Structures are given as C-alpha cells and as structure tokens.
Length: 276
Image (tube, rainbow, N blue to C red; front, side):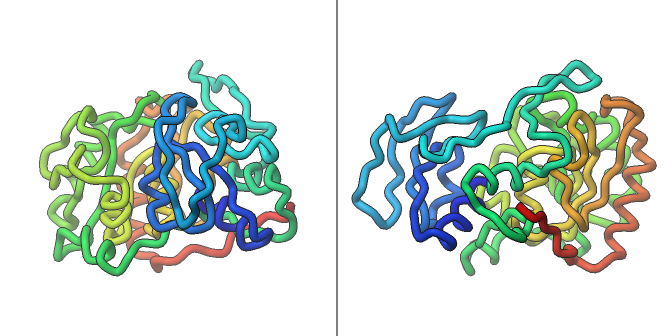
C-alpha cells in the first residue's frame, strides 16, 4: 500500500517521498521515492533509487509499520482492541487504510483503492507450479486473528486437493500442511508476489499477503476477523466471517463453499474508489 501511495503522490506532485520500510525489496524498481530500510524504526541503510540525494535521518518519521517524511506524517493511525482482546493498528471507522494514507499526503479527488505491484517480465514467468487450478494459501501469522487454524486449512486441502493443487506460502515458522507444495520460507517477497500472480486464488486471513494478492490481481478468499471490514476490504474478494472475532470458530465448509464459488467467477476486480 505504501508503494502505491508514494507512486500516486509522485504522479500528482512530481515530488519524491522518503520512506522507511522493512520491505525495501518491493521498491526495487521504483524511481518515484527514496527508501530507507528500517527495523522497529531504526534505519539500517539507504536503498538508492535513481538519485544521489541521501535523506537526513531527521527527515524521517515512523508511523506504525510505515514512515513518511516529517512534512507528511500519517495522522489517525492508532491502536484499537477488538472483541477477542487483540490490539491492532487501525484507521478511523468507515475508512480504508489506503484512503487514510492518501489523505495524509494531501491527495484529493476520486482515488482508486487498489494497491499495485508491477512485476518484471522475468518475474511473471515464475510461480506457475501446476497444470490444474492453483491455489496459494497461508495458515500462519504473527497474531491469532490473522492466523487461519491449521486444522481448518488441512480440512480445506483434504476436501479439495483432488480438484486443485495447493501451494503453501508464508514463513518457515508456520505449521506445514500435508498434500500441498510447500514453499514456506523459500521465496523472496517478489517471488511470493509472482506465485500469487500465477495462482487462480489465494486463501488466507487478513494481513500482508491479502494486500499483496490484490496488488498483483489475484482473487482471494479471506477469513476476516479482528478488524472492521471497511479497513481493508477489496471488492472482488470473497470474505468468510467466523462466529465472533476468533478464527478458531471458523467453519471450514463455509471457506470451501466460498473457494468453489470464487473460482467459477471471472478473474477481475470491480473498480473501488473513494472521494477524498
């Protein structure tokens, strides 16, 4: 999302933002911003992108996971506690994360809500691992409300693997599933994006891979809990809500029904926008 916001800002103003992120790999081919790689708010090194200008550290401000120049700090991103007792980074009720980010940069008008990641021609050749319909999935995560329980995911795989091939992506620490091609911890971020771009569907919970799937236009079935739906809703995805904010209460049959239905629909996303 930060990549998309920085690009839109540059297109509209001609100015390059200075960003701090743990995921500088996504900015590898970006010529519209300056990037600092940071961990927990501490800059480690500068990733130079078509410029010799080295931003000063005092020009950087970190906001949650993101950082923008001090001139354009993101207001309104705070912390709220959901019904399951989990704290999560949120935005004002009724607004999408991207809308908040755009508004913080002073961008106005009718603006599309859709993160974008352009892959190179060579990158697009990677990631198709099956002759059948290919489903990428992730069952782990750093927070419970962003982690699909392994028994639920294994039930989905067991019931559908005769019809579809599954590729498990995500961190090496996530519990492995059986009956899948396991790519956990083996892919770079951009390779993960390529797998999603070449998959017919992504199945997971809300989180980074949900946004990455949308950025490469991979349809998704998302188990949604712990956040107000409008914060990171993407038109064109299918959403399954558990009983309450606990994914442990998620019905695997509801997920299977959503998967089967979404795979019969066109691989496209209705235009989603907001007026700022």
